[in-house]
Image (cartoon, rainbow, N blue to C red; front, top):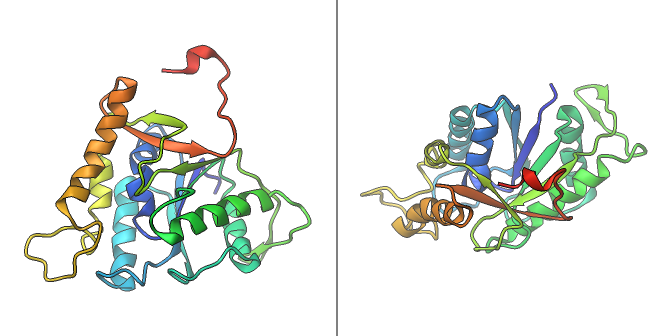
Length: 238
């Protein structure tokens, strides 16, 4: 199966929080989207890896993703090394995405920056023919995605471009809050974390509203790039 977009996150829920309205919009337009989690989020203060597995599956179904894979790397301790790069390369070569969306380049959680560089490096290395990989018994061909973009997470990083996601914020919120173990619940007897506050919950909406305001739409999601974004015509801008 060839897909259009591969969205990669260090943890289950990274993709949903960072770019799921954009994914929902593209899926609505007929694009094929796949999801890849690097870890199971087993070090998370709330819930368990098993609970997160089910929540991740539920969120993928809500979005309409073609698949969701988890590499099972060590939460908090994975590194940008050859074995980890090869595991991502295998997924890239199998599904041949045109676009890869990955973690913020710099963020509060150390795994986000690490995951960002790991995914970006794997996208480059995936194009090198002398790197041999075998997936499900098949020798794979080299493949390089055309674009690698980074979604915005905890920090309010200024985006290099934004996507109008008006009409798709509700789908994003539904996917995000499929992770019931991770977010604020009235009466829940679990430790508080930076994302359990009602302020954080509300910030998902008001960030989208603010980015939308800045481009004259209702809601938007922002991304950063590794090279200059380009348009074919000045009229491509909205």
